[in-house]
Amino acid sequence: MDQAVRQESVPEQSHGEHSAPRATGHASGHAGEHAEGQQHPIKLYLWVWVLLFVFSAFSYLVDYLQLQGALRWTLILVFMFLKASVIVAVFMHMAWERLALKLAILVPPLALLVLIALMAIEGDYTFLTRLASFVN
Amino acid sequence: MSNNPTTLEPGFRGVAADWSADKQAFPVPWGKAMMWIFLLSDTFIFTCFLTSYMNVRMSTLDTWPNPSEVFALTVAGQHIPLLLIAIMTMVLITSSGTMAMAVNFGYRRDRKRTALLMFATAALGLAFVGMQAFEWTKLIVEEGVRPWGNPMGAAQFGSAFFMITGFHGLHVSGGVVYLTVVAWRVLSGFYDRKGTYETVEIAGLYWHFVDLVWVFIFAFFYLW
View (cartoon, rainbow over the protein chains, first blue to last red):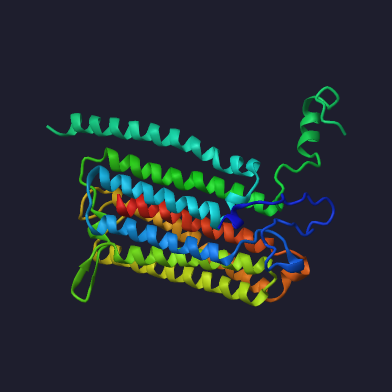
């Protein structure tokens, strides 16, 4: 697996020919003269696939076993983040992209945490207001 | 051309010169960078939906219908919670796996395998939409869930459910069309003539994102 995670060379910037073959390394075993783009061993994808199945099965079990309270929410979030991470990192190839692209795509969503926090406070406030006004 | 700020053109001419300059920030095909930026904007849209769902669920005085029971299926006399949703999740994950391998075979210039795996991905996507249609029908006809109310509890359940899963279902449907078109072009040798298979990877990014969104919907709507 480490063979796949290593990025030996950065895709060269193509100036004229748009389709200039880009060498991304770690494809030496099978790519031959057509080494281009994101090539990783099929085995890696199958591993991630199995991993996603296992994580999904676990998060389904959380409901099936009717776990409740803090344990339920923690497990749901943990499996959710694990699944989301491997999809973005391996299936979407983010792990092998340049840092500039990683930052451009992964940092802006952090602003959404502020939105979620604000809306949680607002929802709580609305709930308390309704409780005070509509329940005797 | 130098990048020294003192020698660059000032004012709006400078803005135009900077933005139209022959500079490339991301060393990836432009289509891929644009797809990532589109997916980033889509992230914001889906987060807005999920956040509004969180807000109405937190603020309602009525009890929220228990998704575990609402989405349960009775198979062979056995009452199994969330069965259909679990199957839908597996189908979508499988389609993501076949798509990832299609990208791989695309870059190896294996036309047949790439197209086959992409058609398989589209077929799995179609199966997902089919199951979702079944789920919606069951909910509307049998359980009487409407966007403005339902017999089980908080009225907001219906609107949140239809909005979120409907928008996701539209993404899957659009993805099926997208993948079918690209797979057809792979088969016809279009990308061999073009000289690059990057379009397959770009289509793959879209498809994995659809799977990614489902991970969050599954966690927050069905399991929470």
